[in-house]
Structure formats: structure tokens, C-alpha cells
Figure (cartoon, rainbow, N blue to C red):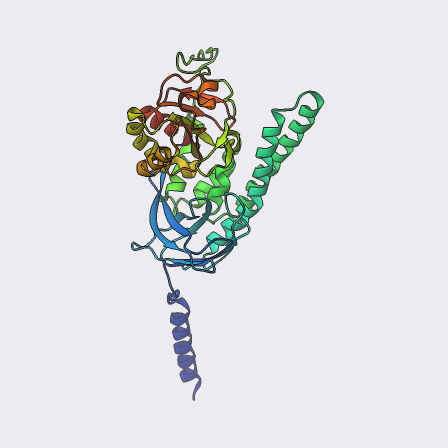
Length: 395
């Protein structure tokens, strides 16, 4: 073979190799999300939800196998973005994926409820990276929350020392997020790290992430949410020497008003187990005083269900205190009205309910919205007013 023919032959082989190397490879089971969750019972519901217009929307659901295995394939192909697997409405885990991937998730579910950490994810590089970040972040955030709660009970030197530890922990969390962003500049997983930073204090990080993902990820809800947060931070204007608004008193039907610390409520749930309002610190919580026999309460329940479905994934909880005296009627009303949250309590004393008396409740329905720190944000809130308040707090 002469030199010219050799060159042509080599060029042809190179061209074929190029075509083979650049051809898209078929991912086996593309669009399917599967795996195993250790520690759950057979037939445990596992739901796939997607972020859409500020809410988590149910996309698909399956039941776990005897070994905790599961497999979900949505009817409509997933768009590239943030999605959530939630086990039995208690244990969420976030994925960044679409219909071209086939993520496989393996994890052990924790006691109680809460975000799953230390999961193993294959088949989705962005999801795997996000799991690594959350695995480092969540334990520190839990420690921060415990410390914040304990500081309220301290005074003097003890409070000063605890506050110093708290400030160091806040800096550690900021540095963790900043380092993650720096090390993974082109990954959509950096959006999760960005959310844990203040746009006023960390404008450089916001600019960097938003710019690097502007061409590939600007269509996503998460990107839009964080960009809006950043844009608002640089456009805010304050009026100097403006006195703070006066705190509004709640008036009748409540001993407490906005700005007061909500007293703890300790009472039995439908299973006879004792639960506490204080266990929900770190969440935005609506304390709802109601009863199965109360017509206005039952008519208000669809509004609560709608608000819960829209904002629960963002940190909103409902703590329902029933003024029932008949347990069967109380439980049937919960089921019939679709009150899906777990925090239902009642001492079956009717109008002599211990919590309602402590709060000075003289008529129902009555709802009190409290912040993450346990301080009352607003009382006498329901319907559209509740939606508006939650939109301000979360969106």
C-alpha cells in the first residue's frame, strides 16, 4: 500500500472513530428513577414531585417492595431541574435530573422524619454532587438549630459563650457553601448552596453562579427564584429616620398578639402519643383551633389544605388543636377533609381544652401564625390572608 493510500485509510478510520465517539449513547432505563431505601416497610408510598411555579407538584408515585426497593417512571418526561423523592410524606431527598438519565438512589431512612443524608446516587452526576453537599450541610444546620433553641434559655456568661459558638457555626456554614460553589462552578447543584447565602452579604457568589448557569439553567424555577431574590436585594431602598410600625394587638379571642412568644402546647395526637408545638421550631407554623362540629371550621379546611400543599415543602407546618370531645368524630373529620399534616392534637375536653384556655380562645375557627423562632407573626388569619402572608414569607 503506497503512502497516499495509507493516509486515506487512516483518515477514514479516524473519521469513523470520531462518529462513534460523538454519537449519543442510549442510557438504559432512561427516565426511570429507582433504588432502595433501607428501614421502610413493604408498600410504603414513595412519591416523585417536581418544582413548578413555586410549588412541588406530584408527578408519579409507587409503593416500595419487601426489601425497600422502588421504581418510578413518570408518564411525561421530566424536564431538567430540581425534583424531589419523598418517602411516606416524611423523608425527602432532592435530585437534579431529567428524562435522559436513570438515577439509582440508595439510602437508610432516619428515625422520626427529616431530610435523608448520606445517600448513594449513581446515574446522575448533578444529583450525586448535590447529595454530597447536603450530607455536609445538614448536620451543621441541625446543630445550629439546637444551639439557637438552647440560647433562649441561657443568660449571662453562658449565653455569651453559646452566642460565640453560634456565630462561628454560621461562618462555617457560609464557608462550606462558598467553597462548594467555587469547586463546582458549572454545576446546577451550586444553586442549592447559593440559597443558604445572603445576597446582600455574598453578592459576588450570586453573580458568579447566576452568570455561569444563565445559558443552561435560566429556564428552571430554582434559578428564577434565586435571581429574583438577588435582584430584589440590589433594588431595595430604605427610608431613613422612619419609625418602626406599631405592633397591632390581636383584640378579643386571643390572649397573645403579634410579637409575643407562642406558649408551648403539649398534648396527645390521634394515636395517643404526646407531641409538642415546640418540636416544630425552625418551621413556619399555623396553630389552628377547630372542631369537627364547627361548620365554619370545616369550610375553612380546604384553604388550609391548599396552603399546606403549596408551602409544606418550603418549611410550612400546621398544628391543629381540636376542641372535640368525641375521638371518632374528630378522626373522621380529619380523614374526610383531607387534613394530611401529622400534627393533630386533642384532649377531648371540648371547650375546656387546655391549649385553647391557655391561649384565651373564645370562638373558632381561630388561627395563629408563628415564625421559625416561635414568635407570633399574626393572629386571626385565614383564607386569602393566610395565602398572602405565606407568599411574603416564602416567595
